[in-house]
Amino acid sequence: MNRLNIVILSLVTILFFACKTEPDSKAVRKEVLNIHDKLMIDGEKVVKNKMKLDKILISDQVKMAPDSVQQKQKVSDLINRLNAADEKMMDWMHFFKDDFKGKTEQEDLDYYKAEMVKIRAVEDGYIKVTKESDSLIKVYHVK
Image (cartoon, rainbow, N blue to C red; front, top):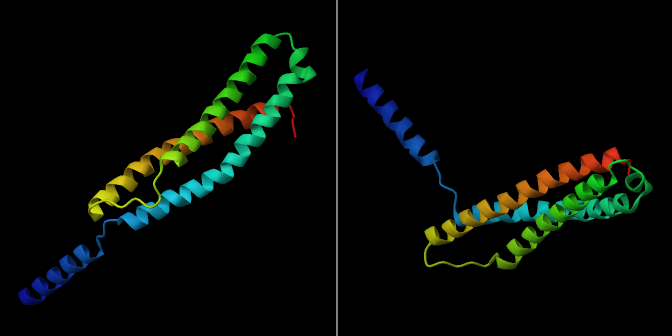
Protein backbone atom coordinates (compact mmCIF):
# COMPACT_ATOMS: atom_id res chain seq x y z
CA MET A 1 0.00 0.00 0.00
CA ASN A 2 2.84 2.39 0.79
CA ARG A 3 4.39 1.91 -2.68
CA LEU A 4 1.07 2.61 -4.34
CA ASN A 5 0.74 5.92 -2.46
CA ILE A 6 4.23 6.93 -3.51
CA VAL A 7 3.51 6.09 -7.15
CA ILE A 8 0.23 8.00 -7.11
CA LEU A 9 1.84 10.99 -5.42
CA SER A 10 4.65 10.93 -7.96
CA LEU A 11 2.21 10.82 -10.88
CA VAL A 12 0.14 13.66 -9.46
CA THR A 13 3.28 15.75 -8.96
CA ILE A 14 4.47 15.06 -12.51
CA LEU A 15 1.05 15.93 -13.93
CA PHE A 16 0.90 19.11 -11.87
CA PHE A 17 4.22 20.37 -13.17
CA ALA A 18 3.49 19.22 -16.71
CA CYS A 19 0.19 21.12 -16.79
CA LYS A 20 1.62 24.29 -15.31
CA THR A 21 2.64 26.34 -18.31
CA GLU A 22 3.82 29.89 -18.52
CA PRO A 23 2.50 31.85 -21.46
CA ASP A 24 5.01 32.29 -24.22
CA SER A 25 5.64 35.54 -26.04
CA LYS A 26 3.58 34.43 -29.05
CA ALA A 27 0.51 33.80 -26.90
CA VAL A 28 0.82 37.16 -25.11
CA ARG A 29 1.44 38.91 -28.45
CA LYS A 30 -1.70 37.30 -29.87
CA GLU A 31 -3.75 38.47 -26.89
CA VAL A 32 -2.37 42.01 -27.25
CA LEU A 33 -3.32 42.01 -30.93
CA ASN A 34 -6.80 40.67 -30.14
CA ILE A 35 -7.35 43.55 -27.71
CA HIS A 36 -6.04 45.94 -30.38
CA ASP A 37 -8.52 44.55 -32.92
CA LYS A 38 -11.39 44.97 -30.47
CA LEU A 39 -10.31 48.54 -29.73
CA MET A 40 -10.28 49.37 -33.42
CA ILE A 41 -13.99 48.54 -33.47
CA ASP A 42 -14.51 50.51 -30.25
CA GLY A 43 -12.65 53.39 -31.90
CA GLU A 44 -15.42 53.64 -34.46
CA LYS A 45 -17.89 54.11 -31.60
CA VAL A 46 -15.66 56.81 -30.10
CA VAL A 47 -15.72 58.71 -33.40
CA LYS A 48 -19.49 58.31 -33.74
CA ASN A 49 -20.01 59.51 -30.17
CA LYS A 50 -17.83 62.56 -30.84
CA MET A 51 -20.01 63.40 -33.84
CA LYS A 52 -23.17 63.00 -31.76
CA LEU A 53 -21.75 65.19 -29.02
CA ASP A 54 -20.89 67.82 -31.61
CA LYS A 55 -24.57 67.79 -32.64
CA ILE A 56 -25.58 68.19 -29.00
CA LEU A 57 -23.18 71.10 -28.59
CA ILE A 58 -24.88 73.10 -31.34
CA SER A 59 -28.41 71.91 -30.57
CA ASP A 60 -31.20 74.11 -29.28
CA GLN A 61 -31.52 71.80 -26.26
CA VAL A 62 -28.18 73.03 -24.98
CA LYS A 63 -28.53 76.61 -26.20
CA MET A 64 -31.92 77.05 -24.52
CA ALA A 65 -31.07 75.26 -21.28
CA PRO A 66 -31.03 77.46 -18.17
CA ASP A 67 -27.54 76.17 -17.40
CA SER A 68 -26.35 76.23 -21.02
CA VAL A 69 -22.82 77.33 -20.14
CA GLN A 70 -22.33 74.36 -17.80
CA GLN A 71 -23.96 71.98 -20.28
CA LYS A 72 -21.76 73.17 -23.12
CA GLN A 73 -18.70 72.79 -20.91
CA LYS A 74 -19.74 69.26 -19.92
CA VAL A 75 -20.22 68.24 -23.55
CA SER A 76 -16.95 69.92 -24.61
CA ASP A 77 -15.04 68.19 -21.82
CA LEU A 78 -16.43 64.85 -22.89
CA ILE A 79 -15.46 65.50 -26.51
CA ASN A 80 -11.94 66.36 -25.33
CA ARG A 81 -11.76 63.15 -23.31
CA LEU A 82 -12.94 61.10 -26.30
CA ASN A 83 -10.24 62.78 -28.39
CA ALA A 84 -7.64 62.03 -25.70
CA ALA A 85 -8.68 58.36 -25.54
CA ASP A 86 -8.44 58.11 -29.31
CA GLU A 87 -5.05 59.84 -29.26
CA LYS A 88 -3.74 57.37 -26.67
CA MET A 89 -4.75 54.52 -28.96
CA MET A 90 -2.98 56.16 -31.91
CA ASP A 91 0.14 56.70 -29.79
CA TRP A 92 0.12 53.08 -28.65
CA MET A 93 -0.21 51.85 -32.23
CA HIS A 94 2.57 54.17 -33.38
CA PHE A 95 5.07 52.83 -30.83
CA PHE A 96 4.00 49.17 -30.80
CA LYS A 97 6.46 46.84 -32.52
CA ASP A 98 4.49 43.93 -33.91
CA ASP A 99 7.65 42.19 -35.04
CA PHE A 100 9.62 42.73 -31.82
CA LYS A 101 12.56 40.37 -31.58
CA GLY A 102 14.51 40.42 -28.35
CA LYS A 103 17.64 38.50 -27.68
CA THR A 104 15.80 35.83 -25.72
CA GLU A 105 12.29 34.43 -25.37
CA GLN A 106 12.14 36.10 -21.96
CA GLU A 107 12.89 39.52 -23.46
CA ASP A 108 10.14 38.99 -26.05
CA LEU A 109 7.75 37.91 -23.31
CA ASP A 110 8.65 40.91 -21.15
CA TYR A 111 8.06 43.28 -24.08
CA TYR A 112 4.63 41.87 -24.90
CA LYS A 113 3.63 41.78 -21.23
CA ALA A 114 4.54 45.48 -20.95
CA GLU A 115 2.51 46.18 -24.10
CA MET A 116 -0.39 44.25 -22.57
CA VAL A 117 -0.39 46.64 -19.60
CA LYS A 118 -0.37 49.63 -21.96
CA ILE A 119 -3.14 48.37 -24.22
CA ARG A 120 -5.29 47.43 -21.21
CA ALA A 121 -4.94 51.03 -19.96
CA VAL A 122 -6.10 52.27 -23.37
CA GLU A 123 -8.99 49.81 -23.23
CA ASP A 124 -10.01 51.01 -19.76
CA GLY A 125 -10.00 54.60 -20.98
CA TYR A 126 -12.15 53.71 -23.99
CA ILE A 127 -14.65 51.86 -21.83
CA LYS A 128 -14.99 54.64 -19.29
CA VAL A 129 -15.32 57.55 -21.71
CA THR A 130 -17.62 55.61 -24.04
CA LYS A 131 -19.99 54.77 -21.20
CA GLU A 132 -20.07 58.40 -20.08
CA SER A 133 -20.66 59.68 -23.60
CA ASP A 134 -23.36 57.05 -24.22
CA SER A 135 -25.16 58.25 -21.09
CA LEU A 136 -25.05 61.89 -22.13
CA ILE A 137 -26.15 61.07 -25.68
CA LYS A 138 -29.07 59.13 -24.25
CA VAL A 139 -30.10 62.11 -22.08
CA TYR A 140 -30.27 64.31 -25.17
CA HIS A 141 -32.01 61.60 -27.26
CA VAL A 142 -29.52 61.78 -30.12
CA LYS A 143 -29.69 58.95 -32.62
